[in-house]
Image (cartoon, rainbow, N blue to C red; front, side, top):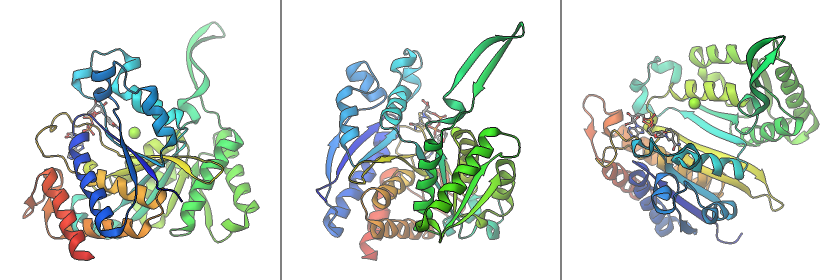
Length: 369
Ligand code: NAI
Ligand code: MG
């Protein structure tokens, strides 16, 4: 494999602040673990708008299409509230996702032992929790046609359309099976086959894919209705390993699962596209949180979501799972030592700044190797 390329897009608000910490981590991995990557810098969101009058340039988009992974901080902020919609910061992010055809959105829900008390659920319900939600991101009711106002039997009404092709369901289900093969060997496929045609179709296609591929036979497939899944996530979340679901249900269920474990500042994500001829997938890694204008510029942002997003890049794009495991361990230990940013500080915690948290993770990595 030639040296992988990373496109770095810090963006706006706390984006550049948490990004500074991930750059320190990349540098540490290069020095101590032989990580060999070529990095390119780019602008996205408001940072790009300020310079070029658009939220993403064609040049940066072309670099993203070529990169082995795109790392993004966050975009947006009140400064851009009155900017026209098509050049707003969020438009840059949407264009990246669409042009790169990032159809599989991965959101882990993972508990860190030291943060068990940050959850609203009982510790025994979530201790050791490790779920990965795979949400279909480019199809379904958010994109289906027709949509909008229409006249039906003489009356004004509004429609959204849920539509999925077999290929769209298969490619996201394949991602889920591939991931489960490297994790707990269990996939829950979630829809509403009882009341929706697309749900029954989804179930049939996922079952068909599972049955037709001997390499998936070691993976246990279970179908579950989305409403039941929402209940089960709160009642007994540890029954899940990988959950694969459509765009709408995935939007809701991933937010629900995220809050099993605590703060927005801790949540990473990955979005994957289809593999090319060489098996390389386009991919973007970003924290779930936004640009947090209320704390931007104050050194208060929690960089862990950003660092853990890079951990996902190590795992899914760079084939460096051992480094990702090491990072997880370092984060776990730092939290166990009571080192916290303000958003996750409990009684007795040592509150540190954004860079203080980054430094603590690096110091722990130094100790671990
Ligand atoms: P937000 O995620 O930026 O902030 C929500 C709350 O969580 C704020 O109180 C913030 O201080 C806190 N928070 C977020 N990340 C944190 C971190 N790493 N450490 C500590 N506290 C953290 O969402 P909000 O306020 O709805 O949106 C602010 C701006 O960000 C808007 O312009 C919005 O459009 C944009 N946004 C961008 C996203 C992205 O780039 N992917 C995602 C969500 C919002
Ligand atoms: Mg959402």
